[in-house]
Image (cartoon, rainbow, N blue to C red):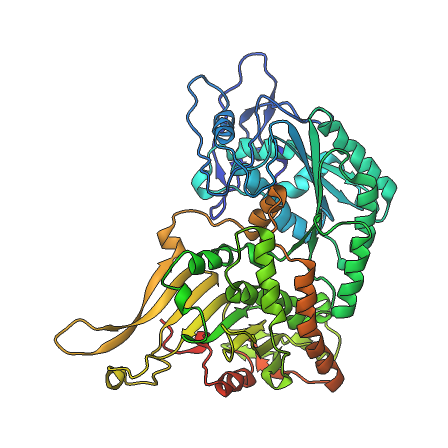
Length: 596
């Protein structure tokens, strides 16, 4: 692993192999020099200690609106290029939402609890660095890791350094920015339930915050749900901000059923208010999900069609082309219904189907989402199909089944696939099936929303379509991942002297239309927490309504001891899922051979 001294000469750039380049001029006489790990001299930048971190000659960025550009201007006086970029960031600074902060004079401390875990290393710290890299981190920020492992600040910085990457289109000064960011990262060991250890953490944060008007603190609980409550209690009592706000990010799962959710919620409320809690579902931070409401409410062409009069069915599909691969122990305790359908897919449905909110304020949007969930009919068990993948030997390559995973209990009936039909009992959606499907070890990796419209009544060209009219109907496809994009299937005349119809698509491919990097969901969501924007976070009553829908299904599966239908690794899933769609006169859009 590259140590921090090698980072400035070898900047890790997203989508590229490591590249070597000189990043600073040769030092002036008398200035200390250190090796950059590649045999090149490097200026020694003064380290920022926990006691002195704050405004420096390097400066820092200010939170910006996500759409504000943060390109660096060339320096005319020999100043550090990062200073120039930060100066531009400061000039364009503005805060999203209603909770404006004076980030020129306020401090921000971000604490990642469970800092040595995989989620923290792979997602959270890279997201924090990306926010800083894009010029959207407050000027007086510091990052703290908290976990039970013993390590020094430098060991902690080395731990996270290997996972930090820079944007391909803005790779200049990557090494400088990376080192500056790492100099503001500190580590505090402690026991998760110890109020005393959190007080020690608070003392360290106070050292860097005391020179600012106000200190705001964010705690990211990247820990197992079994210790949410004790950590929330210890952190609330021992490390809440004495002068500013304290916000806590809580990762799913939020319980396993209605009873466990209610207990977890009640326990957390003993230490935190609803205003302080940010229940994160990373799927809501994906680019196409945030664009969902824009697509509908900012385009006149779609809003009038968004109802039972024109839409025949809506499909929300999630598939992975890999299995548990040695991580089945955790998955087996939750299963695909709790892991994907009850949160990711149901949240997408509520955003898709909600009525027009009064405004873009978080509470107005979440009010409308809750109404959708409360208007959903109880799920009929005849509309539920569960499956479990089995091993497969194809072209000489053997793929293991779910039960072949040594971490999975022998004879487990845990579903790795589920498809179901849901209905919303209101005037807009009455009778329209919302078909949800999620599974592991399927043919492809994809997440998408498919809106299949009704066929044209009395279609003049029915004889020319030469196929089922429903298959020739228009379809709007929103591809969440990968290959993000939006396309609309239409019927069109083929060029020529004859009259032959063809189905084609109007295609907005993000990769070809927008020559920019799409931010990771964690970047957007963490930035929203700093801004106090809760639009993409889940409120307590949303979860209560969601569990009210799914708890009876989970209990029925257990009580009946339902055995999942087996399907081969790498297939399209159980046959029962296709029968479910056919029951409502529908074909799964992702399984159509003529999908274009």
